[in-house]
Amino acid sequence: MTNPPKASPRSHITARIVAGPGPIARFKARRYGLDTLLRRPPALELYYEAGDPHSHLAAQLLPRLLPRLKVPVQVRVVGTPEPVLYPEADKQRAFALEDARRIAPAWGLQFAAEPVLPAAAASLLAARRLLACTDTATFLEREAELAPALFAGRAIESGAQALDATEARAALAANVQRRAALGHYLPGMWQFDGDWFWGIDRLDALAGALRRRDALDGDAPLLDFDPAAARLPTVPIDTPVVEFFYSFRSPYSYLAAEQVAQADWPAPLSIRPVLPMAMRGMKIPRRKGLYIARDVKREADRLGLPFGRIADPLGAGAERCLSLFPLAPDTAAQLAFLLSASRGVWSEGIDVATDAGLRFVWERAGLDWPPAAAKLARGMDLDYAEQNRQALFTAGAWGVPSFRYGDFMTWGRDRIWMLEEVFRRRLNGES
Image (cartoon, rainbow, N blue to C red; front, side, top):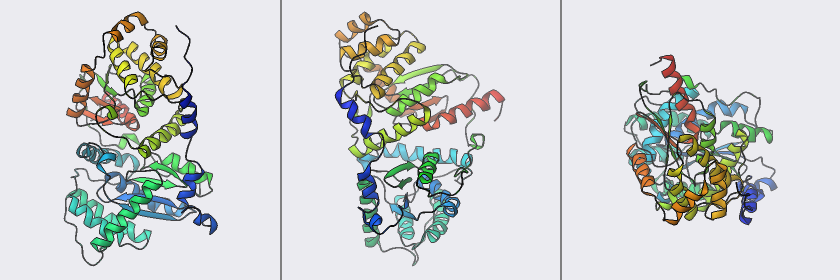
């Protein structure tokens, strides 16, 4: 095997950037220093969108969280994300609805068993009513009434308890502007002291951040989690394979590949790489990319995986990895290449757009370089990656990592537990 190439110079910079939000982020979160001058503690903020399933789940946490908090809470109602920040919106909203339906019972939360996508007009009216709330208690009382109605497709009454439409648009815009200034773009997000935590999936990280500031009483988890309570389909025992949709430019795919490599699943694996989203015409603004990198860093640290010295494979790097992937003779070799390339790209600063970088990660996976060099000389071969993308879209997903097992499909590394629960039920003969 060749010697490892030197890490790219930029990777030393990215390692510092992704380590977490710095003093500037905290300065902005504390109202550009005003809270510090007035000796106010940093507030915990929830960015809530009416009609967003994960916002509704997050709101249900607040009644349990409030008695334990030592800092103020502010709920900021926002509208739908900009299209550039929320690609394939129809697929994402449909998935969010099904995802919330599945996971809510596992967290001891309420969500409709047969939800519907709320109409835009109904969600906007609900937002106006929520914006009219003057305190958190009133917001929670009204949210508990409005959200179930939205997800059941029932009409929302305006009455006198709704903010004027013009005032509501201004309030929504102000909250969106603050969220953007603090570095985020989605609803269902918690912000505390310049850091961001997604919905109920990052509750441990949120609790840790609160405890570090002595802002949370007690050591008990914010919510109890029981995967056996999740609403999941029964998958026939003769389902042949687990399909793993992967991108060489997705840091979440890297974490997923590491977890898949350690898994002992009762079904063989089929790895289906796809072209990165940014190479499929989808733009990834800076604040989105920065949040993702920092979130992955935090998760990687929790899992004991290296992350941060990044050599972005966008473009030639991803194309070259995709072109070589079919040369790996079997699934074990394919997974070994995925792991080697991903570790190189996301934690070692290895540029796989160069022959030296790609050769190193290829040979480290136990594969011969001469056939790979010959294939690269013939040009890029991405047809199979496009077929994988079409299969991903047909299944109702849009991004990676995603997993399909028969009729069961889920998106995100945070849902590997769900796939494993499907396996457990199948092996135990549970319906």
